[in-house]
Image (cartoon, rainbow, N blue to C red; front, side):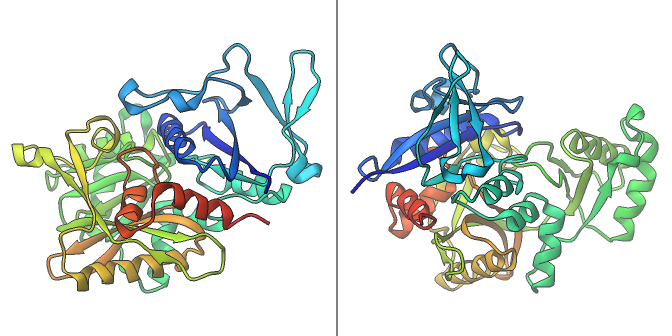
Amino acid sequence: MAKKRIVVMYGGKADEHSISCISAASALRALDTDKFEAIPVGITKDGKWIVDGENPLGWSLDEGLPTVEKTPGAKDVVLEMALGQDGFFAREDDGTLTPFGHVDAVFPVLHGPFGEDGTIQGLFEMMGVPYVGCGVLSSAACMDKHYTKVLLSAAGIPVAPGITLDARFFDAASGFKTNADAIMAQVREAELEYPLFVKPSRAGSSFGVTKVEREGDAEELAAAVFEASHHDWRVLVEQGIDAREIECAVLCPKAGEAPQASWPGEIVLDKRAEGDDQFYDFDSKYMDSAASHVEVPAHLSEEILNRVRETAKKAFVAVDGSGLSRVDTFVTKDGKVMVNEINTMPGFTSISMYPKAWEATGVRYTDLITKLIEGVLR
């Protein structure tokens, strides 16, 4: 049987550019090369699509954070929309176009805006090209934490209390100090309890997230909102939840089928034992291997673990998910489960929860990728 030709995409214009590169490198190393022929396509930080650039198989977190660059020999990718799955070309130095050949599917291992937010999914929908992952609506809705909460609340799924701010109307010249009292008034009106977490609505990997602990400190709160606004004008201020953060991997290779949920896992922040007041930020996710470790299944009763699994599947359906997602939940001391957020293209790095959760549930990483790709093939 001929191998299926799969375009694997990575990089992009989002803050998560380098993490996408590492995720794709891990996925490419695990790909079943007896079944699939991979064509790696990188996207530079300024949005150029290239092929035959630096080989991503050589990238790892141990070597630092890679970026997609147009190296000597790299070629621009050109799309011919009308040709659909036959519409992928590389532009040679003399301007001629060399076809990729028939592309059976695209695996967009892209995180954040312009990769995980429905934009590139819409492009492939218009071309009629099969792709791995959630569709336009679910990708867009889950990229925006505000609208994720709107959909989940409508489905009766508990979420953390919070408010949404439009930072476009705040005074950037003062670092939002002139808006501090007005912001504080909204927090008090919503009766949010401290600590607060201030975060951009449409950013990932904990970029721009600040923990605010001093109750009534309007200046600290305004500074946190200002920091989040560097990543998105829509900013969430959420009540901190006294709970454990439990993550569940959801798999639904074929759209419309019933989703499956892995055993839920927990990120254990090891430096808390040293007295650090730590939360799961970018460094503890990706850069500091001593900062945290993954435990799957999480040390909870089987009843609560299954409650998390059912909540994760319900949330996945509520946002019209397909392919894969990681559903992040809070589990309170009394066993209540609420959804924090949904990642429609979760990290695939060597220390990422999504593949580890499925491995612990009995699905090897290579088999997981195979299921995802085969689920969209025609």
